[in-house]
Image (tube, rainbow, N blue to C red):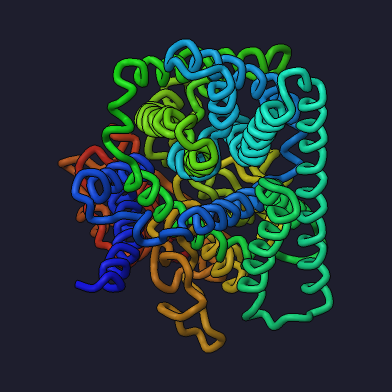
Length: 604
């Protein structure tokens, strides 16, 4: 087999194994990161099936850097400045006191536990400040936490990456300049490092702001056809990152993060199509990067540290992170449950690995302990947090296992009646509607409702998804139902997104067309007009508990077509099932049927 064929197989293996691992993890409902690391271990150091250094050769770190840049940009698109009103104080604490505490304690541990020289320990501590969206994002999507901890962790994980990478460069430059000029030039070396910090920050802000401005201007002036919007934006992200890095080392991460945040918070042009494109690309990049990360490891690197490596990881998890979080949150409005969760949530990812590898090459023999130390923390923190973060969040009341709540697009009388029925069965229900009057009525009736523009790309980011597990589109517009169903599939998945049956002008149902992006709700032909007419005619929603004596067959025999099944509740397992025409109902004794009961015609 030729070298080209071997490299092709290896590259294909990275993609296939990465996406395959994501699919298997989703099917088994286990953290994808842990499974990806395991697959990478097997494909790399154990079987040597994939050798990233041979496949990419000198392009390995540029590929990793550009991939991380795209991931950070996509993460920046998820950051809303409005969230800072609630989490700003805690976030500032984590990015100042938290960083200083983590750096100091990690440096101390690297020096005393791993036996690193003080300078190398200081560099190791600065690298391990970072957490990163490559690991935090997938974990948060799995946990789906309630309250402020999700935005706090998301903001910290994205913003801290460029800070940590910049700090590592400054530490390296500080000691390098001090060594070159002699020990008596400490103050001058410190001044050089400080100037370097200002330069890196300025270059990142300038490049990121300029790139975001060019994108907005190009879209406002219609300089590009729609089909080129996403590719052009990707090219601009790559260009901003590269130019910033060439101008000033490691300023590219800050540039793309700033670019993402500015585009996400401007109001001049819509970027929803970019978000969907970048999220799909990010899944591919994260999957591939973790396969590459774990495949590059050498077992002897992890085992060479022995018990010291285990002690170092435990110190970082049990001492460093909790102390940093509790000192950072002094005087804040975080509950003790939120502080405990944040204290147990700081996985390291690809940024720490890439930065450590770069500096190990620069340091030569002096940095041979740096990579093993960083990688053992990556493996340890990802393994521990991915296995324990969700159970801990659930135990603290900050997450729900298999959430059964319902998000409903519409607050019209029919939607409110459905919401009352579900809420009375102890399921969380949230209504979204652009009609302020319907929203106010829903709130006065004791329902949770938000007045929003359903087609606004920011709507999906302003919803508290804690406890919600499915989406129902019940608006009067088939187009709106289709569009919002398509948008909320990225949150709930295709299997838990539903919409009312659409109708053509001649009265035929458009099932299977492009206008259907959710599963058809309740019954084929039960569109908004029909549903509204039923309620105006006096239809009501009722709950019927089925027993061995009164089965579902008896229910159908008694009510016939006058009853339309809507939901099935299993009170023991506390599960809610949405009735759809594509699946035959199988209701057992003890379950509760929620149905729309149509009144008998007068005179019958």
